[in-house]
Image (cartoon, rainbow, N blue to C red):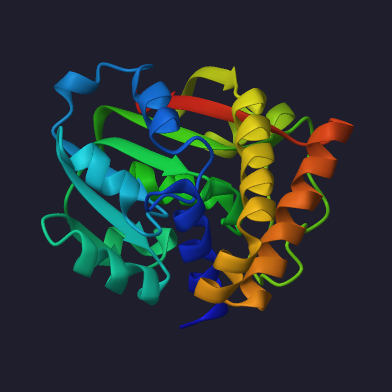
Length: 239
């Protein structure tokens, strides 16, 4: 099993579900409360990870997960055979599927997109009129210049709040909510649980995965404490 997927499974064990974003089901419920979710018919969850969010949304409307990690996709397909998962990069979404969607969600994956603006452009090509886009992710007041995750080749690009309209174009920003408290409380809880269950987690997932995850969350908390990092929910829409 790859180191990357080991970290995801370690977090899933701590959170007691196949989620790798703060507040798990609570975050999903909070996000969809911002829209008329009951009217949605076809949902795309981008950066679907281990599939927990897809499974949750799929109970209400047909939901497809997209992720570039083939091991995560393979796991999701085994774990949630009633859901649909696509392996590929968000930049290639127009080639990966011909379907269109009336809701797109991105939970704690937007920060890892090398070109967030281009990703928004590509997603708009698979959006129906009035499609909603919900992005639950890290935020910063301006462009963040350092990568907190030294073991990961992915970029670390929190949503730069001073450029949010430009980043999400051609989508129209409807609302930006500050959810820093949700991130902070969730991450403090994760560190507390990791310390209390260190031996079990190391046995199940390996010392390296434990050390990497603990170090990453410690670095995140340091930046939250300093006020250089926050959390946001961006609601955007195609007009």
